[in-house]
Image 1 (spheres, rainbow, N blue to C red):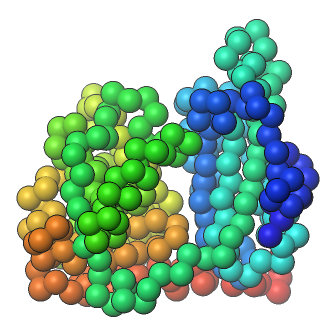
Image 2 (cartoon, rainbow, N blue to C red):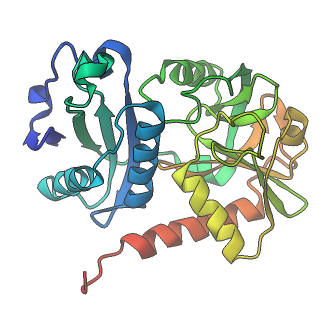
Length: 300
């Protein structure tokens, strides 16, 4: 598939950035991963708004214009004639002039959009659930980059690789106070006595509390919407490893697998070791919502 780079569709081998690009040199950049269904990126506006918010808060761009980014995504989908796909939008600071205050206002970000086939997951993952490992405390509320989808992803991929080497499908991250944060590449949900529980994400903290080092996931937000629509009680709060082990159900969310059941934490099974009814109910509702929002509309 061709990729979009700074206003042009080019072959992947021709998608070249300057050697002084701040994303390449210092991982100064942000990205969003989206799923495409029926030729439409699901919750595109939410992804763009999150990226723009992070760009402003972290100093990547004072006022990121979303129209060119929106057009870049749509151009990539249309040019490649995509029906279903995995799409990644990357925005870097561009030239290292960003680091010089007198030049920062004039710099142009690098914009790259890449499409690939949807990740093919074994159906057994959703029928039987996966095992997860608990990683050492790593999510730091004192890190200004925590809770943002930056290019600095090595630590997460490293723990994910360690989990895979041990036969697990994900690694659960803890924050430095040993409370649950998220998966390495996902958001975390527990179900206890009919209530949906999830750790605080960035921007949801109580007034005066430390910042939550958790990404406010787009799929996570949709799940919370669906819970409200289906009259399922939901709480955002601090959660412990004991909460995880004693949960009735556990599942993970991201834009690739949507909702993925967790049926064991290391050697400990979650309840009866099978995906629970609320997980299955919410997964079905989420897939239906994706279908509804992306299905072609003759009036568009």
